[in-house]
Length: 279
Image 1 (cartoon, one colour):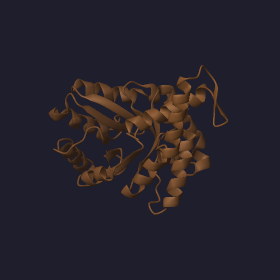
Image 2: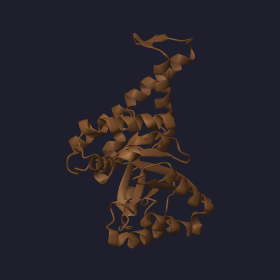
Image 3: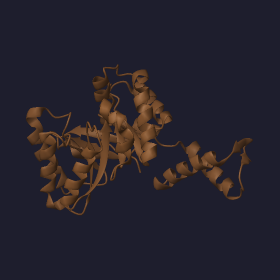
Image 4: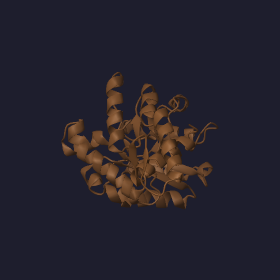
């Protein structure tokens, strides 16, 4: 199931792993790429290897954002992962930045498979070329979700970092994710103190079809996860729809509102989510 929130923390701060987990975020991501200065890459890589071997390591909630596999640092990241015997036979979720073609995912998958690890990949769409092939990225083997990297994309395109300028790219990412059968996750909201702005931004992308959003500060986690969760009223109504649908042979009326197949499917998705989260 697509995480509602992924909380980032820098690869040079392995001490933040426990704090990130304690935030309650569905998943946490240790970043070896943009959050790490060029001169600190080896330090961050070594820190990541220590977290991956820690007694409290939780593979279901942990993501590692490596450097682009086509770069020397990305190659070193994959080589270091291949040396960890403790990961063999276990799932490993990797976030792959600045992909311009699905072949980059093939490279990661083959190297991880060769070391006996099972990868779950989250490609990031953050270049014009990546957006041009987003459908292929979302449909590639082992892809668990697709992340919209709006900041880097806005720089690459030369556009403003605002809603209107990025609406097409966001919409295309959502459509590609649906075609690939995975969830789309949105970029972080960068103003840590603007909680009203965060809530508005998260609500907008949820309405657009995103299933979750990333965060760069623990204070954003609870608001994001609440917005990307059905309300109690929505869950109650969805259960009523699915129960009524069992006794129906097609279209039916519920509270003077017509319910047809699309409405039933939407309700079934909410019920499935609620059951998975014991709601």
